[in-house]
Image (cartoon, rainbow, N blue to C red):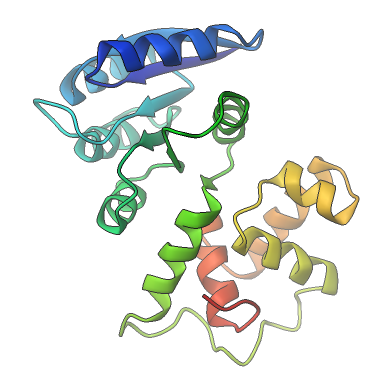
Length: 217
């Protein structure tokens, strides 16, 4: 059972999320928080598998709450779900350690799948968010993670295909469907990519794919 903590300052939004989470047999609501500070306290006490976190909340915003939860409750993964998809929020949420970023108008089924995805250890970004995120990263002045000339020779053709799909924002299950392989096989390919490219997470894989010239913003 995946235990979910819901953090949002609007009672009606929390009620909606509670109903959605409660509709799934494999998910359970571990608690609700109306402020960022309350989210930190509840996460520390109940240690949920996933925290669905809004960004704009009183006392402490969702970014700072995410930073504190990921630093002190390592078993909890934070999925930022907000109406605000402005770039600065995306960057701040990812830097704070969020495992995913989705918009509140995401369909219920997609939200449930997103919770399962981050609970399983994967990162998740809405495709539109991914495109803007990478467009920003690749136009910055910092040195690139890798040469745009290509990838290391150790990367197989199949791993290259998987890397492109990761860069498009697809989950392991979606990659499996696209390439006609199982989600488990897709996850194995992603794990190999993380190791071979010395990448910390899927976000770094996405950036590497763009900087290697496999995809363009």
